[in-house]
Length: 212
Image 1 (cartoon, helix red, strand yellow):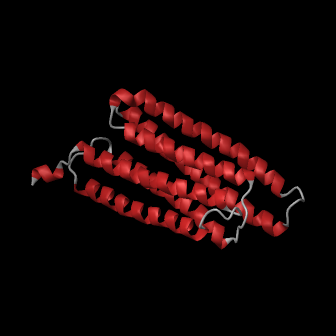
Image 2 (tube, rainbow, N blue to C red):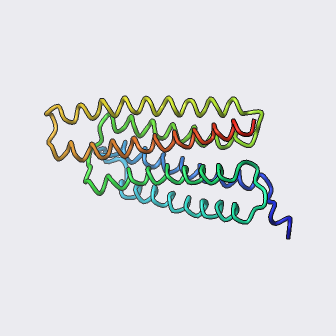
Image 3 (cartoon, rainbow, N blue to C red):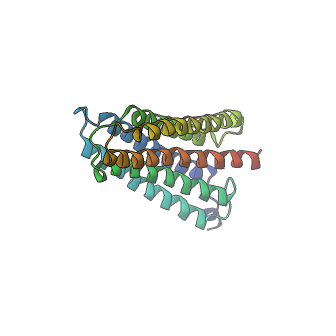
């Protein structure tokens, strides 16, 4: 019985990696979704459903990880940090889901260069986050993990600049007020994805500092 309270270190890391895999899958589906708007090359409803399916699958992984935390006597890293990182991964995927669902909710039929750039940055940040989590168990890869987190921070800053440019163009008089309002909401939701990725990256950095 006591052994059941002491799961192998790899169980926590495997669940975190599986969770971040779903984040990447959702981000890639959102990338195809935004890039496909107005092109007629993608099944938009199917891509929205794919994002939602990945979010639902991730919820199961999150529940499994939290249950493992509750029943475990020991954890490979601070249990509060494991919980925080799990919730932050969940928030990244929830933010991606919000972007996908906004396409139908706000009847967005065309994308913009800025929307495409932001969704590409989101997909890049999610891929980097996945790589950082995969490297987390290996102390010999700590510097690599730190560098990945720094890249996520740089991408978030780049997305801020893209969003500011996009917002200024929305209200320069070239778009209808209704289109401007819809796109403003989409840009805000896209920026939230990057913000949540940055939060998760900061938690990973904190884990590294505490366990160095």
